[in-house]
Length: 534
Ligand code: FRU
Image (tube, rainbow, N blue to C red):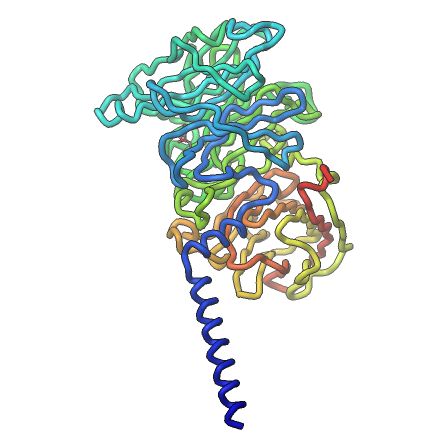
């Protein structure tokens, strides 16, 4: 009997020691960080292997490969002296990181910019047989900034003769000198075929400046755009100008993207767009667009809080002839404190843009540029079902919500609020949906998991206005561990946000605030990004 007692006592002491050890490990900050890093690192959005990343830079397409450079601090997980990191992909789902492309130099660190393929070797930096890739970026001189100078941002050039893998700086940098404007950066260049010249746009204080060149090296100032137009509640950054066919017509309009921080529709960073004409010298707003803009400024490429500094790829057009946009999936309000340590922040999925004119109003739509079939490992669907109370769309363990694309169609909308809840059994919940009374979409991440790293993260739910008032609605959403990208009405309204649940979400429910006759149908796709190479 006594022997038994000692044995039980011994066993229980052992077990409690084990429990204590386990508690210790889960409270151990380093172990916790490693767990967060793995739990939140997306499977098919680009993240740097190590350390800090912000804006996408210098994106171009060549011979089947998409090149992405990015603002990178290789020695820290917060912003610092900027380099250009480099990654490539052939399918836009799987990315391979390469050695750093551009290092800081005597003129400063390497801020955002673009890259073009100089097919005709106009720059003379390569040959016609082996055209150079030319990168145009901002040199940021932090030392000069400290001395109170206002000319510490200048535009410089680097070129690559091995298709973007290694780079040389142009000896006579900078190529566009600062005229005395503090924020003077983020050059984006394209070849204007109809006038046989290069056009460069950059952010200059509260406006965009345009320059032209025949050889990418000598630039002449053309004009400015933007004073008093659109949103000016923050710094203008990362412009991009490109022509687009109005969907279903042969008319061309030019779209000018301008990122702004802060000032976004839901706080912090976001990207606005303007529709107009560009004659090779001057960008002028379209009259109808201007009237709409003055009535209600709702021209954001994405109303979610986590899509910033997006620009388009050089040398790439979709099947419809449209540009491909990719942004940084974070927000300057809290980017440096999100709960990952080894790496910080991801890019959005790439999106084909489409310019539509619906009842006299321009809308820039986004459509995900992924060939989904190649990555689909499981597909199920639900035919028309009435929404009664709370409907379970995804039961625990029936679909991997860590890598999924879900499409839902709601028909017969009524005057109520439709809410989707992604949940785990720890009580974390990400809610999003649509209120047909106010015609507004929303995302509420206040209970989504780890939220206390920044007050800004959950300040208020994000909202977005719906453009039409149809009584049916399609919702396409993509989940990749710690992000949701929502495309409403075939990409008329987009919302992208990140979140950090304490355990993966396992269920998806749909509920309406009141009893309705609304019906839903849905398609569920489970994704495996490496499927195409299996
Ligand atoms: C936008 C931005 C750019 C700048 C870069 C610096 O997020 O502020 O204007 O070039 O980041 O990292």
